[in-house]
Image 1: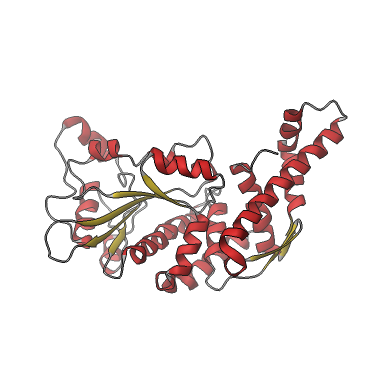
Image 2: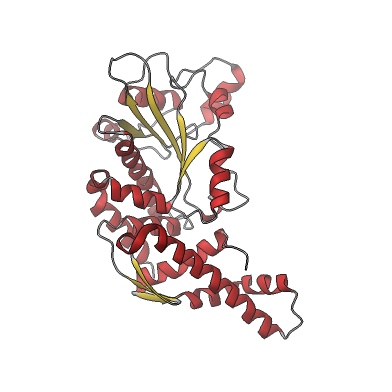
Length: 325
């Protein structure tokens, strides 16, 4: 049987989300939902079976169920029983709350990405804040970082928090430079009539989070991470190019100079990138780190200080999505 795909990951998410909301769920029931959506027919067609439609559909349901179970088993294998907040019994899941709520929040954020309503956007914005603090802890205790992603908040809020100010890209980058203590020669803009048009329309230069660990002598240099976040199902599927948007070519086009040395790029997602070859290619193609759901959950375990101030907020945001049912 071919390996699981990102569709298989989405099927696993639906089974987990139902268990999160109702206490337990059946993976086979999630497969039946996909049969109603036509996915089981697609699987069955791939086998070219000369059998009645109902039997071909059953083959498709079995295929979907098997791949979904393999995704669940891979999550359990990577995270272990301590971090994976579900008990697995054959093809059923039973929810057992995690201590910090990070896995549940990332699952809910993946679900929220499918909702256009304004009240669900806060999960996506807070995801960027959580990524910022995890990256700060990853670099070390003296790292500094900000969220610069769109949408921004008011200047008054920005002055008392890590929220970027409203206004054009020049104001936002100047604010970021000050917060992260970059030198005047870093993150500069080359002049040009046509690039000015692009910059005036830009919201966040495709950069959602900037984290920097300076060196120890107050001179230019240090380790800089810049992250782009994408939490939607189609941000990570096999056809997506989202992970390539924050490229070196884009940075050279948009800025005159970035940090010295060049920043390390990160693509962060609340989704689970299932296929290891796909994960490798996404990192190799854009020379970046990919932090998906299971990696972020592991980071949260290794750096509890980064999550401590988020726990109440992310649990409240998770409830906002689970209460929809």
